[in-house]
Length: 442
Image (cartoon, rainbow, N blue to C red; front, side, top):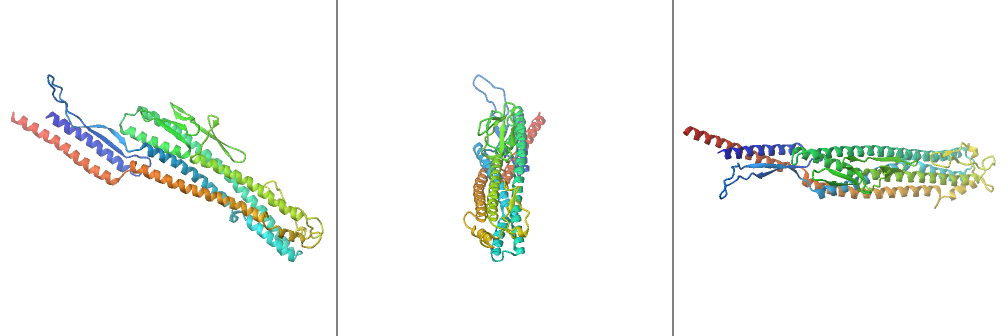
């Protein structure tokens, strides 16, 4: 009868723990990074007699083998790789959209200013002495210069913003490395199959997910589940053997980013850090391109205007100063009478020459081509981001199908273990009643 009591007691203990595990699953159904847990129950075999030997009697029943997590290592790794690619493309696209906005006519008005400049020049061909049109011409010149300064200022601000974002992201990355080492310490001390171990493994996977979304990392695991983390590109040790190696970031004068680990270059082709590096390169290229456009357009217009004569018969002055960069481009302080509408042969010759500039290679078409190049780059980045996002979502769904909580399944298991618990309790009750009956009959 002691066997019956032991069987019932083992059932109460096991099924109570199973109900608690199901309760944890239900409570954490919406918790990010939580993997479904299952209590592993095995039969506790009772010993029997053998010829020439009578073994010690051991009660049967059920025993707890441990808590297991519903995970698939391959799906997890695939999800991390696709997450890193998606974060890279999303980060890059975000800043490229901002660059496109900074270069758009709605923001800086360069295209509108150039169009107004040439339109006013056309009007001056018919009435070259009109002071109002001359003033409008100079205002268009000032609008163009102001537009270039506005675009340069916004791109410069973006470079600073990317550098700041990279610094914050590196700090978060290094903090995650430190946290991962603490999880390693906990896993080496945790009892195998315990709830504590399962919680540590959940936190380990969550940290690895975050790190993989930030940069390319490769993880290997020991028998305790502790992780050794290395940089995918170089194999440099990030976490392992009690060592944590942080990374660092520096920003060049033009805003380009350089990541290092232990003073050596940290090559990285995925994650948000790679996206920030690519965005910084793109902004630096656009800043250089904007300077080139400002110098080119100002040079063309200055040359055309300086070839003419103003209202007093003096050689035309430069329309723009500070032509070395877009940030310094300024309209020259000219008066309406200093507009060189005439040339040596006619009173409107310079304005006619300006009108003849329109076509391939003129300031308007050059600026339009610059905007088209940026638009094509942004469209390509948008297509890449859409593809990477689709792949990430598919990989996450496949991973979630294994690890996520199905409340219907948990409800069925809850009912099953409640009935098993009641059966175990009834077993103890029957054993107790039987013992009492036997004792009463003595």
